[in-house]
Image (cartoon, rainbow, N blue to C red; front, side):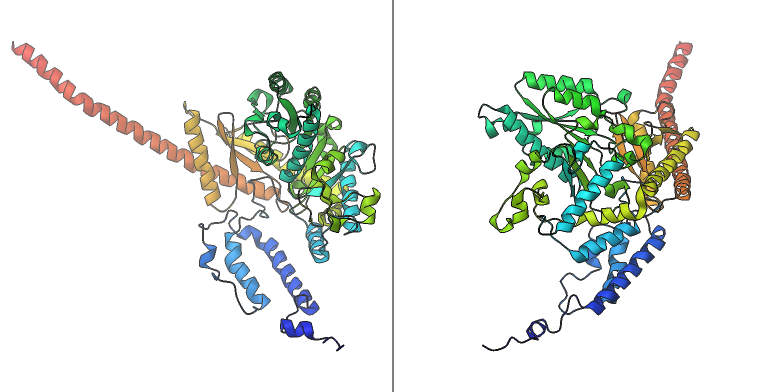
Length: 541
């Protein structure tokens, strides 16, 4: 037999080495320089991208390149083409959605995880990735003071998994609840009972809930979004939930799942976890606590009360990428018993079987999620927790809340504005107050115009929601770079644009009134002339 040509790979690739160590060091240094420069100057960019759909195809080539390009050229195209089309979530003046936070430790962890690049579907495929994930979930559960039943190796068969988003966490728990409810239906009904399963949330529950129910096979007509009221500050009321569940049970339906939200997207309303779980227990329904945003605040003792009653829940999810300085994507899901998840999601092909998995001593994370492949998310979360510690993370949360409290005070101090709902965390919902008998439709149009002017300025970015009949603006503090001065600058911008809107409305109203008066005068003139003529005629007679 002839010897193997040691240069065979090189001859095929023409000298192409995608992991050349010198290139790796040089290009990563260039990338880090790009990132640090970006953060240094991010507030010089318009917060909301000022481009039209399809802009990028007019800048970048329409077909893929053949020959290689210098990395400098790639970065140049990134600056010239991509950056102008970015809405800058990292901007200190980004107040639109709940934040996508970041930090040096998180970026470093994500970089190292990408370099190691394990596909940690089983324990054996990456023991460290599996065990580090369990460790950081237990660390965070400890900070949240979750009951031991949610910890790995705690009381019972609880534990957790890191997923991409809350959407995935909700879907995983829905399919577990679905299968448990089908088994509970009994009588050999099996999947025939699926059309009778009912899921419950509120009209403030995240849209993820309805989407996940559809994917899990629930009849859309049996996904109940229980109406909330301003009087309950838009929280799900246990009495209303019980009324809905009793009516469904009486109709032969099967209550299967209840989503409790701690910190709704529209207004950070908090559903009462304990009382709702008590209602759900009457029907054997699965209780999931969605604390995607506000759950992070519960590492601070002063906010932990919002999770009271969580010991009665079946599952809890929280997204560190929203408020715990961990870059996308990273969502924690804890369950008090992993078996319903693994029974619904387990896959066991021959090519993945191995001794540790079959020994029962390990949990394969592929069996707690929808997909099989997965990223090493635990590393960046571990680096954040390890590098910063609980004290700094709590200080970060409190700092954002303090800035939101200051903004709320600014709004309340100006009689032109009103706060729409009480602030709990770092979101303030407010609007221009209706004036002079203005109806809700007119008030909405005025606030919509205010929001358009703010966002078009490029100096800040905000969003809106509708609470009851009110169209309101959302001011969400949370970007890692935001400081008090950015909040103050945003408030000055809001006042400036509000003045323009009010003046515009006043001019329009005055013009309309003048036109109406002129029309009335013109219409009255012929009648007056006719009356005068009649009078003259009578005098002559």
